[in-house]
Image (cartoon, rainbow, N blue to C red; front, top):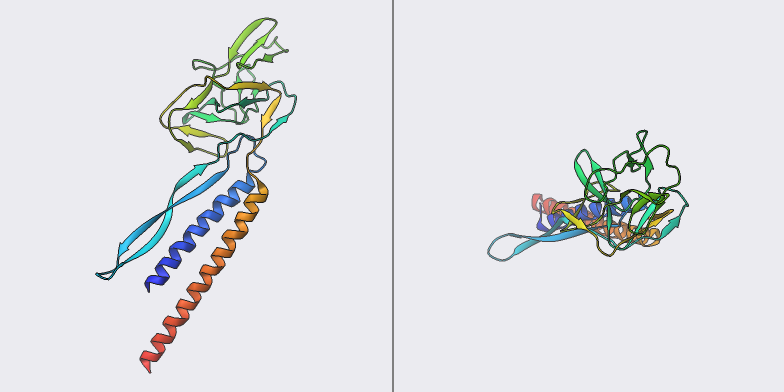
Length: 235
């Protein structure tokens, strides 16, 4: 196989992965708290002899657009959004995870949980429990949950200490830990929408598709060239 074919194939593989990222963004355009994803590629050089080398590319990682999405005011008692760079901390079977999706509710025993049934962390760790007789809950800008002047807990609004790794479409894993946010506020009765721009993602999808088709043409031409070369050698 010629070097041109190797280079073209790695390009096609990268474009396929980029298309998967774009498609996942579009699929989550209406997912609460979702952050747009971008593929990052790196170049690899392989020696081909004394005369030079071969340049190929591959997926090196992902970058996330972390800017805040628009707020949708639902009026829900336990719907909350973070204003600022903070995240809600949620306890999952895999450990604490961070999320911007604040569609919370109470479990049968009064524990504050998220849409996936995982307990929402209170400040300092642990869960938040609301007594069954309490029906009128106010959530303050500092994340405190109170009723009639009595506080029942405070949401743990945190910021990651290092890079974030996407754990699912709603969760991030802060592999280097997290600390309490000092400049974030909480808005009751609102949810943060996905920050995906469908128009930009569709434009990117068209761009990737055209690049893939161009690469396919290169492969077909190279295959035709090699076929003609082999035929001429046989003759």
